[in-house]
Amino acid sequence: MKPTQPNSAPGGAFQTVKDVENHFRARMEKVISDLQHEMASVRTGRASINLFDGIQVEAYGSQMPINHLATLHVPEPSMVTIQPYDVSQIGAIEKAIRASDLGLNPSNDGKIIRVPIPALTEERRKELVRHLHHLAEEHRVAVRNLRRDANEAVKKLFKDKLISEDDERRALDEIQKMTDGYIAKIDQLSKVKEKDILEVK
Image (cartoon, rainbow, N blue to C red):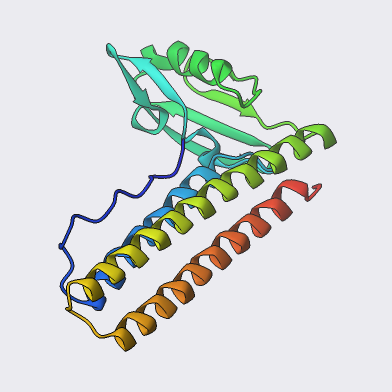
């Protein structure tokens, strides 16, 4: 899923530099939370219920997230158990896991699904790291697009004579600092996740 691309600010919607900063800070925070959510479903060598976040199950005539249909647990580092609220959905849940790109092989005893989480191969780790880098870059681009829109909003305030030239300069500096801070946050999240993927248990 691509990070939410910024919409240009509605013309004249901002009255002050503070309005611009608050609006775009909130948008950049959203980019970070999108990234955290997407990173959570990238496999590492350890079992985690977050792995299943992206799986949709065909149940009751519609697509439903797996955690709406079952309780997920990690009883040991290389196993996830999935207990459906309604055992009649066990087949549908298992099918959805098999159909996902996680490469997992679930089995069930009629009541509970057990999903062994195999150790990652060296090749798979490298693939996941490439995917992670791609995700991080998409979100950096989203932050930079927001910086561009924020700069345009500030320049419009100046053009409309709502702020002075000094205010404009200060605001553009502040937006650059804010952007650098969020890019650094993306880099840090990516680095931590990469370490997790490459760590051999």
